[in-house]
Length: 302
Length: 236
Image (cartoon, rainbow over all chains, first blue to last red; front, side, top):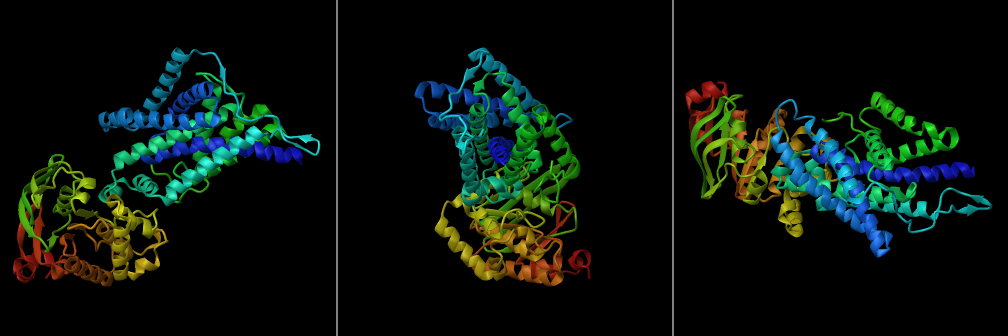
């Protein structure tokens, strides 16, 4: 019983981080129809900025905040300088469809290699803000610790804030309108190009939060060639696809579902099956329900 | 104070969709642009609203050049365009579709006032405010699209085939609504329509397009009476 509760809590914690990453990918997909592989690189860069802040100001929360701002800035710059130029230069021809995807892959490599040159390839570690020693309930020590509680509640709070932003504010309305129908949004007076960059910025902030939260959730170690960030991208992407790639709610549910499934596989079957399970889940969703768990019947618009 | 279109041409690749047309619509007039499929009606509107950037010539609204100005900026100059095929966003609620048109004004009180005024005219929309636009009937969607455009408080309204896909009874009602709104709100309206007779009946002036050129134009009443126009475009 304790093991079961433990597994659920651990699953929700990593799931919430996958959800944040999935949100980042969905936001960019919705606003520009690009699967942004560079998201992992941007998150890594933001996490390094967060790490520097922790070293200097000794505050995890300030670091999280600054990293999110930096993540937003990086993403906005990537969209307005790099992607917009790219869209202008390769709007036609056979390369037009894949060019943005290849470009984000290139950017991912560039950020990682550039960061390696700049900070070196040695591991640094992010000190967790609270203890990572599990809670004890009537003699049983859980793997769920104060740190995990902080991580899961931060991720949930950010997602709640995002959902309020999207559903209740004018900015959210512009973002949704521009994503669903750019032409009608423009006719209604929405400056779609700016809104698109804003979508990237929010994605950058969500990705940065995912990066900062997942590092202490794992080993705490951070390096430019970190495998954890590659996994974060892969799992975030799988979560986004499970959720239908077009839906923010889907991204959240997809992340939580993936986190739970992987935690149960890890606890009750074998750690070596975790990676395989994630991909099997992806393939099953694509074959059985390609529009995602809450996707609309119209299917995916590419 | 009028819309003055001079020598307007639009090319679609190698095909000339509109060939040097010139016309004038006075402020407060409802102008019906009619013609067969492919006569260039939609292209004309898309050039006027800035969606088509390849237009040549000139189209001045109150000394302001419409051609090559982005639609999101034209809205701020009082020009609203309802594009072909029920220009609403089905994923958003009725209320959100309406609000969208007034976002750029940053005037919450003014926009609510405008909304209430429109909802008074269209109680069907008022009852469905929280529903997604997807659930509306064709006619309701068309009215929502027009109301969304009116939320921007335009002076010049460009309407592209509002009757498309609607039942005949609904068509008559939509046209009557457009006529009423033109008069009560002091709008200038360019109404592009395949449904020539219904459009001319409510219009002040008519412009008949044929293969990108103006085949006939003048007061709507005299176009309806013109035997040649009747034979070629009104079907009897």
